[in-house]
Amino acid sequence: MSRNYRYIIMGMIVFMTVVNYVDRGAISYAQEAIIKEFGLDPKTWGEILGYFGYGYMFGALFGGFLADKKGPKYVWILAGTAWSIAEMATAFAGQIGIAVFGGSAIAGFAVFRVLFGLAEGPAFSTINRTMANWASPKERGFAAALGLLGTPLGALLTAPVAVALLSFTSWKMMFIILGLIGLVWVIVWRKMFTDLPEHHPKVSPEELAEIRSTKGLLSGEGTVSAPADEKIPWYHFFKNPTLVLNALGYFSFQYVTSVA
Image (cartoon, rainbow, N blue to C red; front, side, top):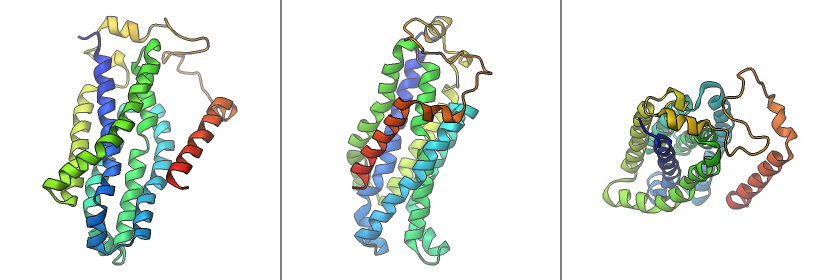
């Protein structure tokens, strides 16, 4: 048993967030080869990149719902497997589009980018659920920061990882290798993670007591041990000004950086 097993879980979350960002950004470094192979133009290429957002939007919404209903482990395995397969399938998206969608390579890339975004969407809502289950009250801010650490770290590593892979292999093999890394993570994660630390044999009673301690709780904060029959209606979140304004701010940030 360990008194710090939760930190291993947090570290694995950071690693998967990095994989998540490298996977989504790698296509930009394959741009020249893909455009040349399928005769695309800059406008069409921009559309292909944009399709990711449509899937991501719905994946983020339903991912949080599933994490609450089925547990974070279920969502991690489902999402991680799905986006890794979609990443590998991107290597063949153009040929699939030509064969299945009336000779349109663009349609093939569009379909797989939407599916890829749909599969990657649940990541951050599931991170929040995972950290809520595994972090002690006094570590919640630190745990949230670790979950977000993978975002800039993944963005930073995308270029060297993608360029290194493209230097030694083809753009298609790059997608396959990146997808395989995600699948390996899913296999390892399935064996080492449980929804709650109470169910994990490597979590010592001392560590569990620390995770479930009410010491350090702010006024009004709760724990995951709240009564199971305590139901919060979905519209409750729209009555919270902080959440609504945070959502509007994040939307504005994404709009300016991604669209404007």
